[in-house]
Amino acid sequence: IFVLFFIFISIIAYAQTKDVGITFEFENGQVIEENSEQYYSFDVVAYTSGEDSYFGSGMVYFFYSTESFGENVCSTDNIVVEKGQLINGELAPGAPLYEIINITDNTSSCAAITTVYNFPTNPNQANMLSTTPTQYLHIKLKILDITGFSELSFYENLMIGQQYQSNDIIKYIPVVATDTDNIDLPVNQPPEAGEESSSINIFQSIPNPFGPKSNNISLTIIPPKQGSLKLSVFNIRGQLIKTLYDENVQKNQEISFNWRGIDDDGNDLPSGIYFYKLIIEGEFIKTQKFIITK
Image (cartoon, rainbow, N blue to C red; front, side, top):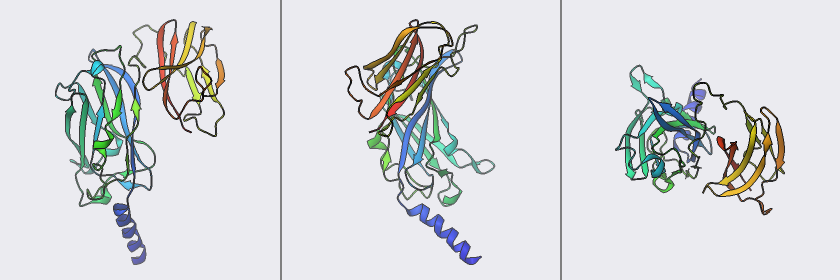
């Protein structure tokens, strides 16, 4: 029994001293409405690139579109930040494991959010950071101009050196925060009363990410209504890369085809983040992110 206890303690100590990397990404972006105001709602997720570790304190910096959300969203109260699964929980009733202690403007187009683990002297009571992306923060930005894009990106240079394991001594190394979210803001808007919902499974793209072992991307569309349907691909700068489909369709008609991940000139697309944009009868229906890896 003593030997097993010693091994267990050694494992905990090892987990708190070994260099482990951390990656941040944006997920689940959507436009929502609350109290007659529209918000762009999204998650910041985190995961480790190595072994599981006890998650501690950290900081997130991210840029956003000032045209869509205005400047200085923190001081103007145009941002709402909530704890995600990764930093929820209590050590005891009334003693939260984590706190969001600061939400401030780093620049007029960059927000800074600081979270702390409250019990660094009890590092093994913290939540585990695993290799599975886990919701760290849930953020809502008030939309001032719905016609624009989100233009979210992390300020990676400022996030490096600011991410700690639960003893608040050992830092996560390396810190990777290169993901972006440049969604057209009408994405996934809820239908008006009496309107037909487009939240059914109208579009699928497999595989995602699309990598060197994949010869084709298989796409399936089930239009929620009839009319002229256009499916286009854009890069993160909003530039049109390729129009994949542009024909008249019937409601609930199943459309399936393959694409080799090439542009209009027949060139293979380089590694990066891209977006599908689906429009029917001139009405925006859906935007979906996909990744190409080489």
